[in-house]
Amino acid sequence: MTGQTRLARKKRPGSRGSREGARKLLQIAASVAATAVVWGLPAWPARVICVAAAVVAYIVEFVRLRSPAAGRKFLETFGPLLRAPETCDITGATTLATGFAITILLFPPPIAAVGFLYAGLGDAAAALVGRRFGRHRLRCRKSLEGSLAFLLASLVAGWVAPDVAFPPAAIGAVAATLVEAVPLPTTMDNLVLPIVSAATIWIANGLLF
Image (cartoon, rainbow, N blue to C red):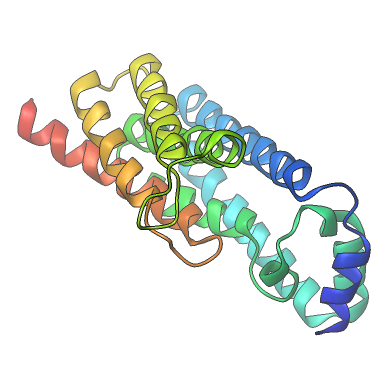
């Protein structure tokens, strides 16, 4: 066990459920903020901001993983929110920012924004509902209740999103739900979900309209 891992464990108050709840609230806040940027700004400024956020996240990761003093300060501040692998590797916040940056660069902003919401609201709903109410386990070790919560939250987000027709958004929600149910490595769903969601919506929109 590394010194940073031991420090992170010392700094983790509260139950595992409360820590996960705090993580998911931050994930929701990040996805809503990124979506607000995309909805409120022209395409290129929105892309620049999303890419800049990912670059800043990687700079922070580089500094805290290379500097023991910076690493200790980082863990003192954010240790209660980290899972064990994140104490000495890239955090979920950074992979989420990376997923958002790639998504906004590859797809039209309205479609990218829906992908942001699926990755934030849908994934958080799946984790919180699955942890609290999950009773029926799927072969992938996720719960049926969590997957249904992901689908419902994503469908609502797709319904209210402007400039994206609901049928493609619904197809994207189904695809994202299936991807979320796959047991990916820690934090990798943050990278994959917005990209897969936006790609499916974009393809479905091209086929249906």
